Length: 301
Image 1 (cartoon, one colour):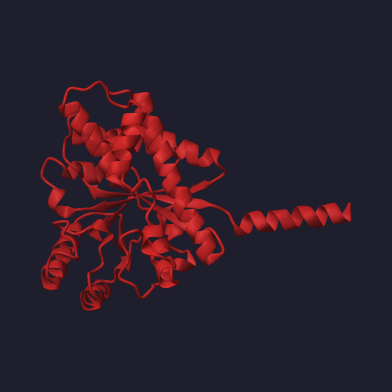
Image 2 (cartoon, one colour):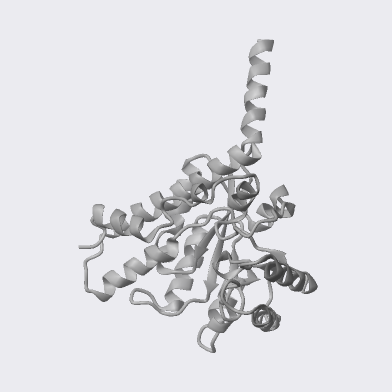
């Protein structure tokens, strides 16, 4: 009996060491109307789905240029729902494509715009996850973020959910019939594979599963299927946590000295340990792959 008890405790300790948890974040808030949903409808569906799924909190990373007189109430609706706002720049510039002074000025504009809202958190999400094409640019931006008391709103699970949504919008524009069951299956399957891909890298690199941060966009795909995705995540034994909790993981203070940041923090850490970049990009982060997947599974007809 004693030996069985010891074995059980050992198994519990092992499970605890590799507990798998993930937080949900959305970029590009608030996005404009689409062919399927108005922005207002999308926000209402997202809030209803997240509430129904009993998600403890999400971060909405706001691109302040998207805030208009018509869309401001949507940002306020997320606040009223209990969610929090982060800075995602004003103009969504890539730190790889504009000069650094233009970039830091733009993120300051967003910072100033956001001061009129409640539920702000001191996190900045780099557009495209681009932190700078050279160390001088990267470090200049980091110093500016520190001066504004921002932390890096990094992700650990990157993906192409934005391209899946683009495929949906193209299909609707072309008058194609959409198999929404197949679309849901594609969304869940592809995103789950992305989660597994980066968790596998983390376990090989860190020796554990960190508190993950999932990057999603405030798009129609999320509005339609976020509750189904969360249900699937939980059915696999994972826990959905708040971003506040996720950003307490030790990797929040592990800042690798690499320029390869576009796939998220786990991939950047792996790169700093000598991994080949080609091994740090999951198969689902490919337009060709997604085109073929949607065609093979007859998502659009």
